[in-house]
Length: 349
Ligand SMILES: Nc1ncnc2c1ncn2[C@@H]1O[C@H](COP(=O)(O)OP(=O)(O)OP(=O)(O)O)[C@@H](O)[C@H]1O
Ligand SMILES: [Mg+2]
Image (tube, rainbow, N blue to C red):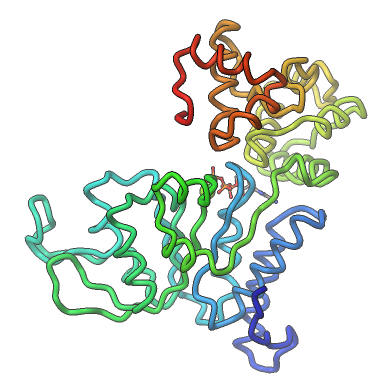
């Protein structure tokens, strides 16, 4: 188990600490929810934020669970000045060839297409603050040793530069993939995983947060109404029950978007069961444990829906076929037959 360094008391005497604690409290307040699972994650993130010796945090969790809020929290609680940088880079959005230069920068004319004056990478830009690397599982294997080196030595070399520049950066890496599975598949380096994930938190999916769903409905309902200068919507008990029972594959993001849509599309202020999308109002029998058919499947044929459900299940279970079969509520022989039928290669999604 990890032993955290002792954390200064919240009621520290110095103005700097008061300021930081205020920022941290504000960042915590942004994260709506009372569930124990969520608060366990918030607690660890706060400790990391306030400790100067833990320099990286891995935030795991499904899409839309609020991982970005945790990166903000670490930034808010870091014991530094008010204008420390917060730099975010989404590894899923970077062209393969550009990773090196985006992360570490380059000197003038380092490669074809390099900018004439050279440019700093995100590590340099985040110096003294927090670097948030989103979807770290997308980082190409060949770049991973370089990232590890920067994290260990805390020095960055721009591409084409022999001079190392010291960087004092806290890293918050996030992933919605199972990195252990990525390691087993040879797509993520174990040494980097141990370095980045020395301290990690898992932000729980919304379906495991119980009545937080209701708090979030309330929160977004008010927020959207206030911004639009309207009255909040009124949800019937049946509608709230359906929202509570729903499995939220897109998590908080899906819920937030739904409330926004209801504000625009609902006929009145009163929201009943019939105002909710079909998959929430009348969950389909095919989603036995509620996780198979994702909500992003409105149209299409049944065959397409089934194919997509299989792909989702394969991705969610990391290709473990017995768990995929259980998740889909079918036998393994049926699963094999369907995988062949749909031309889905086993173990690949
Ligand atoms: N507990 C929460 N309270 C208030 N808002 C939240 C909460 N969790 C998430 N949100 C909001 O939901 C949206 C999605 O959250 P966020 O972008 O942090 O998800 P994510 O985990 O980073 O997803 P992805 O893996 O797709 O990047 C954001 O608008 C965020 O502010
Ligand atoms: Mg994110």
